Image 1 (cartoon, rainbow, N blue to C red):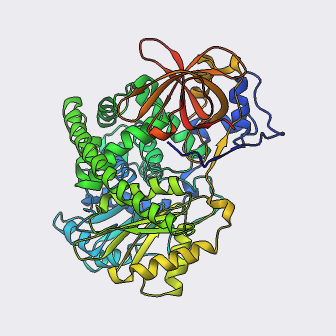
Image 2 (image 1 turned 120 degrees about the vertical axis):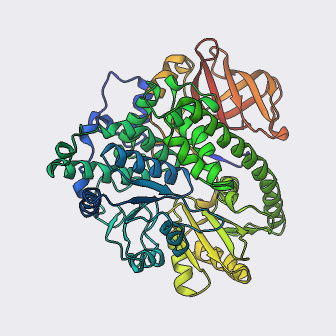
Image 3 (image 1 turned 135 degrees about the vertical axis):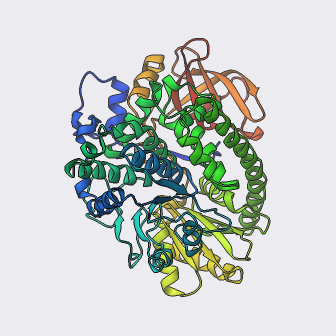
Length: 576
């Protein structure tokens, strides 16, 4: 629940949009505010996806994999310990098995002992499996030392990644990464799972040309059966939902809704008390993804990958239960850390204006939770935040989350250029990054981070702003509107779920659970009373019966017993 210091700013409607008249009028307005110009922008058919040929390094990597398969080489997939890495690992293993690979396995580094990516330590662990080829998924673009260590051991490495490269590339035999190639390539925003999916498409085509399927007596597989994994990894990694990613996510959701998805995702949906037939992208992001991520944050992501590889529904449900237990533990740890961090921020605020960027550290904080913590605080203070935890060696591991307009990986690069040696290693995206530094370098880093961010921002960028799609008149506050918007998705990063604003009178309310509030509201302009719910509301923000309040809200369908309109409140404040 956001506090009252928020400005609601309505998105402009594109005057040149030419959208079909058959669309629900509210959906047409929403789409025109997302730069959707015509029906072509809404065409999410699979045959409009870009060809793998344009993806940097894809054909070279497919060639190396084809040779490995023909020679019977043992292939080991090296994953990452988040949801994108887990889905990427599972997809690579499943796809290679479908294509006829006889020897393929996976290895996910432990966040606490092996570090991020293909490190020399991970290569040493991999050697025990006696692989002939390593394939990284969702990592590897910055793994110079690990790739070199594998090469010294006589093992080729194929890197598949979507993170931004550094000044030089590792000496892998092939690198597949949309960030390394043509900036105009339509698949530039693929998540790690999307990159490995595209590589598997290219590999299938190459194997077809080489006569592999005929020689092996195999039926060429339909790799579309793996789109549920692509959807989950893409949404959970908060990849930008451009038309390519929206297409992948939409078709993955269709598989899941029809009951044809993998048993592991279905089990996680069931554990999260969501209904498969009505599954939305937001359910993948806020229900399934966190449970999968919990394994990598607190323990070993291998259990998450095994869940996604499991075909037996009962065993998948047992693994999903393990992940749910870890997620409950994660929430408990996070709550304690958040209270401590908010106290630090309050102290900084009492000393004067907050700096343009915050660095926070407590020696008791958990390495696996600092990324979530940084994200939560960023939403509260509306500025870049980095949260640190200490590892077993005493080094500090930090996770950074940013606001629009501040490219935090570039910020870290600038600090590293200006003060060599201060940051031991770093990597990431515009909005999220990670880094490692020595403990005694923390004070200087905190100062440098604030100074560098200050070079990139003006005060307006550090204000809390909610982007609204305008108001809904009383006759639009209906189940039909909610169903039309639901069907207009998938919604997500870069293609945000519709959000509206308006004024209502509170007719009645009652608390739900520990910190939620269910309300009945009447639009101030008149009309039918509607149901609403607000989550995690602070006691000081609870309105009184009869109050006129200003809301930013989403409309959805409450399907408990029957279909009813429900407003999900994102922001509540007294009407001014």
